[in-house]
Length: 426
Image (cartoon, rainbow, N blue to C red; front, side, top):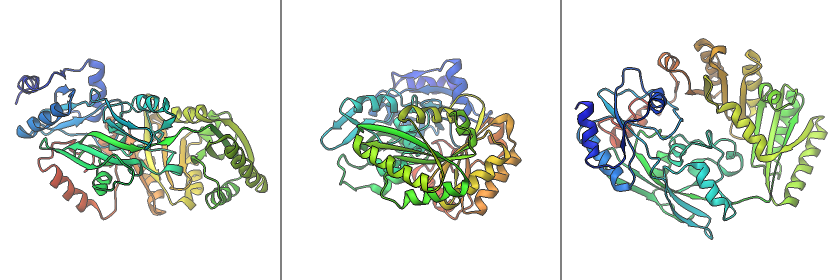
C-alpha cells in the first residue's frame, strides 16, 4: 500500500490519524533505520480504536513503531515495507483508584507525572522513579522496565504490576491479572510483557499496587575510601535499615552535586519523621566507624538533580549495565578511571546501573571494552540511547546467554508476521 492509501485506510476507522509535525517526525525517526518509511502516526482515543487499528495493520501486514514520547530505547526499528507509528498518549484515562486497597488502574498513555499528581491528592504514590519522569507514559515505562533506584526498597516494575491489558498483533485484546493485590492470575504473562519493548503486544491498560506518601523524605551521601565504601554497602544491606534507594555513584556525579570525592554512596530514606531520623542516626554510626564522611541533602530535589545528569536531550550514549553487587565498587572505579567525568550510578543491592558518556568522548571500541570488562565478571552492558550511526554499527544488546531461542519463539507465537516494532528487541 502507498502512504496515501495507508493514511486513508486508518482515517476511515479512527479520529486521531495525524501526520506529525517536522519536530515530532524528527524525534520518531530516532527510533527508525534511515531507510524505513513512515506513512502516518495514529492516535487511538479508545480501546476499540486501538484494537481496530492493529487489526487493520495486521490484515495488510503494515509494520508498527510504538512511540509515545522522547523515549527511544532499544534497537532501531526496521520497516521492510512502509509502516505506521502508534501513539497511545490519548489513551490517558484513570480507570479506577481504590484508595483503601492501595491500587490504581489506568490507561497506558497517561503520563507518569500526571498519575503521581493524582495519587498524591490521596496521600499515595507509585514507587518507581523512572527516566524521563516528566514525559514518559506508563505504557513506555512498563515496556522498557524503567524502574531506576526505587528497586532497592520496592522491587522492579513487575513487582508493582497487578494486572495488564494489551492488544495482540492481530488486534485481539488480552487481559491478565486483576485489580487486587492477592490476585495472581496471569502473573507470568505480566512479567513477559514487562521489558518486552512493545514487541509482543501494545499495552493499553495496567493496574499497579501503591504505597503511602512518606511524612519525611531525606537523602545522605557517604564518601571516603573505596574499600570502606564497599564495606559500608555490605553492612547497610545486612542491617535493619530500609532505605528507599541506595546507589554507588561516580566522581562525575559527585562533582556536579558539589562534592569533591572519588566515589560515594547516595542513600534516600522515606517514612515517618521519627523513623527516618533513627535510620539516619544508625547510618551515621556505620559511616563513623569506617572513617567515612556523611553529608545530609534535600531528598527529592537531590535525586531529581541526579536524574537530570543522565536524562537530558544533549547528544549522549547511555547504557544500562549490570555487575555482581560485590564487584560494583571495583567495576565503577575501573570504568570511571577511563573518563573521570562520566556519570555512572550502580544500585547497591542489584548491581544494575546507568552509564552516560557524551557521545564525543567515547568510541565504539571504548564501549566494547567496558562491555568485555562487565561480561568477564558476570555482568552485561546494553545501549539504551545513542546516535543512529552508533546503533547501526554496534550490537546494542550484546546478549550472550542461552535464552535467545526461547525469546525468538515467543516473538513468533505472539507476532508471527513480525509487525510490532521489528528489530527493536529480537
